[in-house]
Image (cartoon, rainbow, N blue to C red; front, side, top):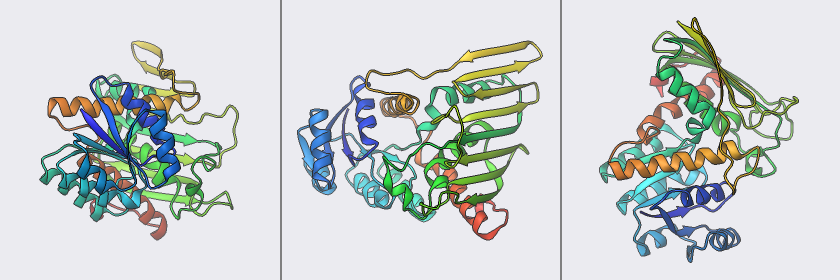
Length: 339
């Protein structure tokens, strides 16, 4: 399978490494308006076909899929362009700036009869995946409470300076991942309420968010995100979990330690991520998940099935993000179905 990458920014190097880990898949063309980034990625990964215009690339190259790794404001136009060319699409999160755009993008790819997946890689991190699989397998019975927590003081702005200037920050950039993982574990959400804060005066958006979710099952979850937390040891970039079920408990603690307690005893499992030769700590957790989710995408294309984090599935995660911002702004509980 031949793919094209649109967007050669901060995170794209991980995606390029990830594609190289998948047998039978090759990125044969790349696109970016920044000539320096285009040259850097092209030289590093030995890709000769380099374009500054996505429409030109898709018209000139014979591709099976496109990997869109640009910022959110460009997603709709690029996804619809790829759909017109009859290509499968994998797109970075957040999928769209509005629910209207997200629905239009899904419709465009569906009308083209192609597969559409959102690069929602947290679901594929080793520790979080182990927790998702354990709950789905009934290891602790029906879950009735979840706390999903990502608290850190890591300087994410140095590598991605636009995060400090965007009007929206932690929910859109980080909380979206934690909300998606919580959905995967606890099921769909009936209502939510959110509170946000800006602790760092040097940024524009919110860097702390607490979101209370009520699920269709009657269960409750708390999604807790912070980039203003000063702590040692620093747990970046780990998401920690506490899940109570009818027959047991599950804890994912710092250091990739998964503990499952039931009446039959306690299991403690090391769910540390693989450290690829091209990866580096502490990013290896995320870097491994990139290769894993992209492998899932390739398998879905080969098998003709819908990805777990399909565009349609991601609409429900995006609704939680939008709902959280509405809730925080209006100081009221929101139903995702309103959006």
